[in-house]
Amino acid sequence: MRHAPHQGTALQERLDVILTTAAFDQAVSLLFLDDGVFQLKKHQQPEMFELKDTLAIFRVLELYDINDLYVEIESLDERGLQTTDLALPVKTVLRNQVAHLTRQFERVC
Picture (cartoon, rainbow, N blue to C red):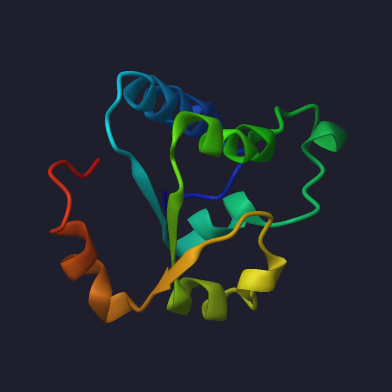
């Protein structure tokens, strides 16, 4: 997840794929990089702009056994955020560890 929330329908479509994949008993983990870290930021107010609350969808990931949410530390730092600014618990990973992390998965989208 690299893009900020509420920039068109891309995030909603990606979440639909993620939930569908998880519903078929596939293990799913998510990695948030760059502006994608804003997707988990607390106190979003998308309704002010008549947008869908995608953070609410992230909150139900646990129901689909999606429990591993990774956030790149440098992406947080570059945007003035800390893990305490995020609405969900995450695991942090350094930028130089991202390639190693992704190699642990069968499929990366």
